[in-house]
Length: 194
Ligand SMILES: Cc1cc2nc3c(=O)[nH]c(=O)nc-3n(C[C@H](O)[C@H](O)[C@H](O)COP(=O)(O)O)c2cc1C
Image 1 (cartoon, rainbow, N blue to C red):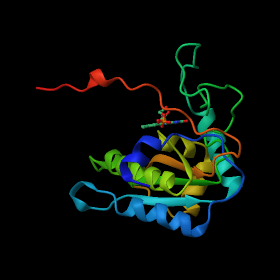
Image 2 (image 1 turned 90 degrees about the horizontal axis):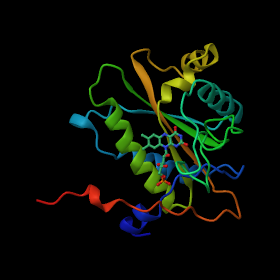
Image 3 (image 1 turned 180 degrees about the vertical axis):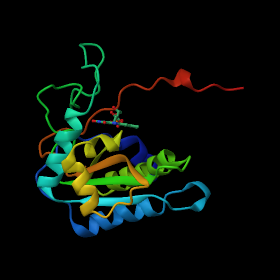
Image 4 (image 1 turned 90 degrees about the vertical axis):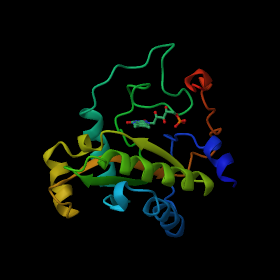
């Protein structure tokens, strides 16, 4: 698909099929992340891929329990078609049962840690969309590792203690039968021309 079409087509997917994504597809998405720009060309981002459903579910539940937000209202909501945890109090897993969860880690003392992860994530989300895979950006990645279980996982994964989890990228196929979500109308007045 043309890149400009892909940019317009990509939407956050939170309702996933149970089917795992193919290894070849995952590799292409990871390559898109590895080729993202990085501040100073430092390539500091670590991509920790978990396809372990039990681990993903437990971390997603810890994250949900450690997320503080205002629930959606009738007029202010994230998505009706692909509800987020602020839209539906019944959702107990902040990773929405996605079969693949990639946590992006970056050095704690690096000024551009968050930006490096965000640009890598956008590259991966666009690659995913072009490959027919649904994705969702999950902010405040560190909250998934708040409980002792999360700390154990960090040790198991061998994550350096001077790195932190900036965000998670969820990947999986959209649920069969779900319509592709519509983009909310754009506020073009945000563009200032001089
Ligand atoms: C920095 C950032 C943090 C986000 N965090 C979450 C999150 O924690 N949970 C979630 O379900 N979606 C999260 N999203 C996805 C947004 O809700 C989504 O991009 C937005 O509603 C627009 O919808 P679209 O991606 O379909 O265009 C995040 C997006 C960004 C850019």
